Image (cartoon, rainbow, N blue to C red):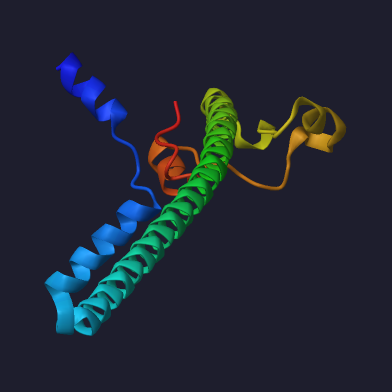
Length: 163
């Protein structure tokens, strides 16, 4: 193998005289067909160039498609990040409303227990200051005397029975 590489190392490009001999032999071999051979060689070169252009165009198209997809993915990621922020805001809102609903439920239960513990409907008041400030402690509304009437007149039916 090393011998073959040394042999190849001594071979160089043909000089001017050698090219003349190669051209003369080519003229003898091809003779009258030389214009046809040159024409087909030209067509082959043109086809090769056309293939290279088509390859370059398809490579450019692939690069533009990859860039378009990359931009689409980046915009989708930005939208997803915005959706995560919106979802967090919605969860915070739901948490706040559930706390408020719990507070309202507690106030309603306190009011219901006040109503049930009071024997005289005229003594029912919405706040401790109302019973002290109004004469007789009456607020102008009367509470039902039975638990069936309380359930029927419950302004918050979704809260459940008041104990």
